[in-house]
Amino acid sequence: MPKLLSLILFAHTYPVDGIVVAVDPQARTMLVSHRPIAHYMPAMMMPFRVADTADLAALHPGARIRFDLAVSKSVSVARNIRKTGDPDTAIAPPPEKLPIGAPLPAFQLTGQDGRVLRSADLLGKPVAIDFIYTRCPLPDVCPRLSANFAILQRRFGDRVTLLSITVDPDFDTPAVLAGYARRWSAGASWHFLTGNVAPVAGALGELYWADEGSIGHNSITSIFDRNGRLAAAIDGANYRADQLVNLISRQLESHP
Image 1 (cartoon, helix red, strand yellow):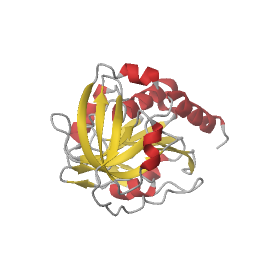
Image 2: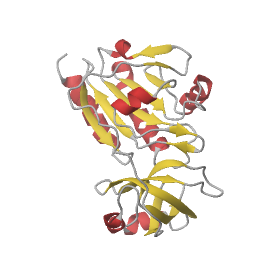
Image 3: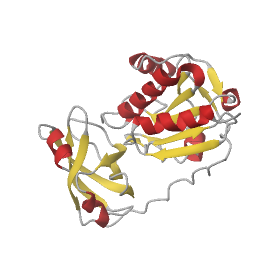
Image 4: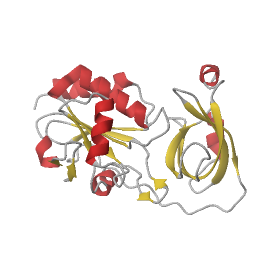
């Protein structure tokens, strides 16, 4: 990956110690629950893109690893991944995702404007849902997800409803989310939601927990059709924006 390596040539590098939660060779990522990274970020669970996909072959859920995280302004990459030799940790399997065609799960969450939004309010338009949190420090995770939704907003306006659900509801109050929404120039059809997010996160396959120093976050983006049925789901944050645009366009072109 010469291009990627050149992007991180002048990046800051941090040592990371954690436990593998999931491995996705196709997306070149590993989901890791890690200890605090000194001078960078607190303990949490995050997906990390790897510089060398061959490193993923030796990994499995529960493996204890160390690696070097190189972070530049626009990208972060895990390098020099090695097992610590400590015993594996038992990792529960991720929640079962809704199958394609399944209805949007019922939920009631609070938006950045303080108003309650219910799943029943969303019928009639395609809906895109992702999971973010405002304190996310990695440039190619939550900021990238939000940038992709900003592209959808500019392209489709109020013809599509966008939901960005926080996985850090204790910190991400409506007021905090309102500030984050302004950062992305969010319009009336882009809702940043907080509250009891665990049920909808679990139903959509988002590996999530919120505890002291720990945030679960595996970046699932779900597309629902006008009738509230799941049309597509994308794992990770490394998809191209045009892929998301095409999925929404297909829903808008289909008959109600």
